[in-house]
Image (cartoon, rainbow, N blue to C red; front, side, top):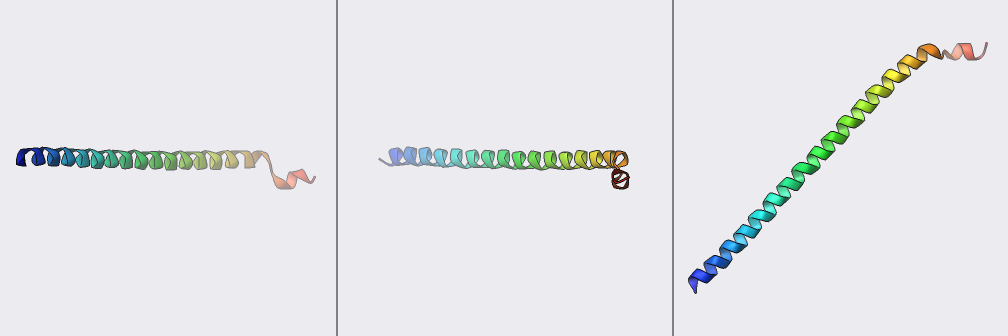
Length: 66
């Protein structure tokens, strides 16, 4: 009887361990997704800023009204 209870306990421990590991893996993946999105947003902002600077030399507001 004691052996069967111990076997059930080991199964429960194993299942809990698997759940915890799965949770940690999911959390790590979510952190990577978030970090990737932040980097992409930063790259887009840098590119947009460069584009605005480049185009500002072509479009001078004072020239539009002459």
